[in-house]
Every structure is written in C-alpha cells, then in structure tokens.
Image 1 (cartoon, rainbow, N blue to C red):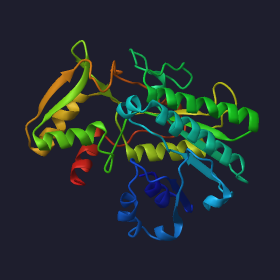
Image 2 (tube, rainbow, N blue to C red):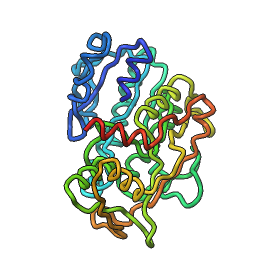
Image 3 (cartoon, one colour):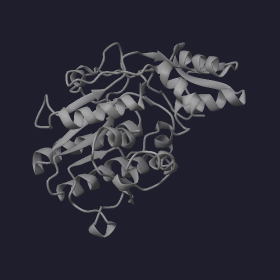
Image 4 (tube, helix red, strand yellow):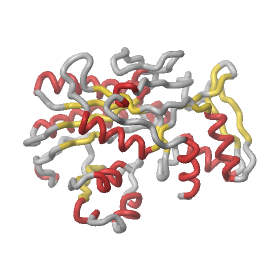
Length: 307
C-alpha cells in the first residue's frame, strides 16, 4: 500500500528491502507493478534479513534521501511463542538499520514506524506522543525497545529521525493472522469467531485503512519535525472511531450474507491478559494537514471485493 501510494504521489525511485519471510508476499507487489506507469523502472527489491548488519556486499548503495523502517515482527500471539525472535527482529533489526542509515550520504530523514501497543491498554484517555510506555506483551516490549534506540541515535550521532505510532491497520492483502482476515475466514468456514473480552466487555480497536496510513507516513516524513528532545519528532497515525470487534464481525457477516457465530473469550490461552483497547491522540498529525478519510465500512467492502 505504501509503495503504491509513493509511486502515484511522488517521482521517487524506491528500493524495497525485505527478507521475504513469513509476513512477506512479493505477489502483492507483482500484481500491480506491471500496471502502474513506469513502476518497473522505479522499484527495486533487495533481499536482506535485518537480524544481520547491512554490508556493501548486500548490493545496497549509500545514497538514500529517505528511509522508512516498517520491518517488524508484529503479531502478539507469535511473540508470546517466540519472544527472543521478536527481540531479534524488532530491536536488533532496528539497530542494524540505524547503523546503515549512519553511512547513508545525504540522508534527510529516517522514519521509524511503531505501534500504539507501546503504551499498553487505554483506560478512558487517548495517549499522546509523550505519555510513558507500559508494554504488556513481548511484541509491544520489543517495539518499545526499538523506539528507545531512536532518540539515542538521534542525539549521539545526529541521525535525522521521525517516529510514527499507529492504531490497528486494515486493508486488502493483510496477513491472515490478523483479526479481520481471520474473521472472514472463520465466517466462511461456519466456525465460531472468538473475541477477546474482559468482564463481559468485548475488545475494540480504532481501525484505520492502509491507504490512510500511507498518507500519514508521507505526511510525517515530509512535514514532520525531527527528534530533538521532548515535544518533537513523534506523530500518532490513529483512527477516529473506536469499533467493537463484535460489531466488526457482525458487519462482515452481514456483507458476506452469512450467519455469524461468536463468543467472548475472557482469558485466551494463546494471549494471556490481552489489552482490551488502545487509543492514540492524532491531533499532532492533523496539525500537519493529515486526516482519516476512509471509513471502516468502506475498508471492509474493499477487502471483501478483493477476495
């Protein structure tokens, strides 16, 4: 989604650095790469696993204007099974990319893409960019640790860094382990959709369309300030509306014309004591001219239309 957006909105040449692991699908790029004007001339794909340093032998030059760091292990359930793997992916991987960025001549900005989960569960207050962290699972903790490297590299080495944090993303092509695609799969199979809850209250999320996230990244990258102390360099990319996951599942079933069977799960064995909801204040990004444009209803219809 981000590459497509940048191809359409800029004249940049783009390099995708990816290890082509469990969360990667080059077909998602190939399907439209041939149809976008001059896309094949402007996009290069390079294999690299960020758990190892980026060396000159990896075919990576040093002349980059911008670096957008999206690479991460990102599913809580998997982080609970493999916490050290997430530390390697998210903390060590970020350190290696920051070190590569230090060698990039003429780098104007590095954007580190993070998550609302670093703050932990929201309890009636939308977190702003400078609230304290309270990560409650290995994924969130690894992302918080990765974030901690950014001001250190900005202060010590003068690296030009901006950080964004995002609420739950939705859109066509999302990995099947995420709630919306897994919900669609369960409904089609006639199974029971399990929804995390606490004391009878279902979990909820401020879903945001991947296209709105791509615009948010571009906005922070081009208009946002750099980390230079408290009050600078951080922006929340957040949806405006809190959606109960029961309502999301019900609307998907309705759009699919299929019955919904669901249950609330208070203490799921694959995710002990899950966070019920997250909440970010997006006013700083709105002050740069960004706003959420796409409703969840539109996003769900697009996801279903894409199969």
